[in-house]
Image 1 (spheres, rainbow, N blue to C red):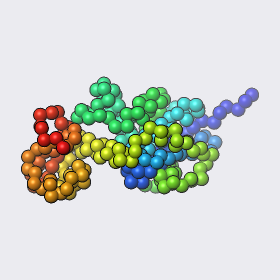
Image 2: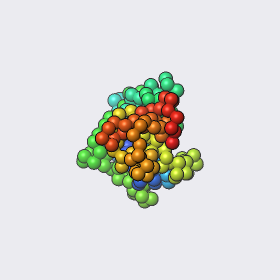
Image 3: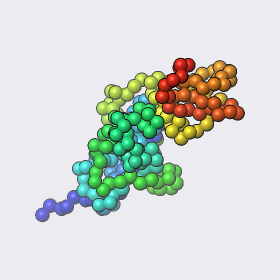
Image 4: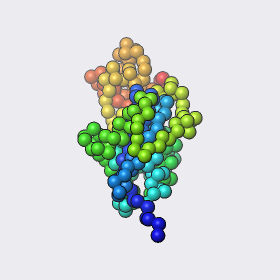
Length: 246
């Protein structure tokens, strides 16, 4: 009789980016009940940290589809963005036509759709604090960081997923930088954070002196920029009605 295939008993993943946006890498690993480990990783020339986190999780789910695994297997990650998007936000995004609660376009939609299609019954994502001494998280981080720096780490029974497969549709670096700023703006608006003038100038890439002369609400791209007093400002998803568009 042929021996039964060895089950996966643990899984972990992580992403990294040098510059965010910039060169990125991801790492993932599978532990089997016989003590063996299978490690994976890859790189992209121009990307964001969040995209690398999603890519790592997608690689694990696709690998697990072909492998026997324990019931109740979890994937350990330090990315709240990945966990909340996968476990909470994605159903609402789909109902709203891939729009956020504030009406903005969901970033990284291509990867979210692939993750949604790759779901495995009973396999959940669980959070582990990054850089806290968790050996699997630390190992995935080391793989991801090495790839983001253009290095080729030695991996246990590893395979390198060719980045050329993904890079074909990667926007040029200028658009990647804009994408990162728009993603940050959406998060700031969703959470209602206030920004001082220096922070606001960095986000909208306008001279500080120009912003110092403003006192009324104005519009930057898809957001209203609202005064809070004391030199602080807040972003709000624009629903129309303000003509002073930057």
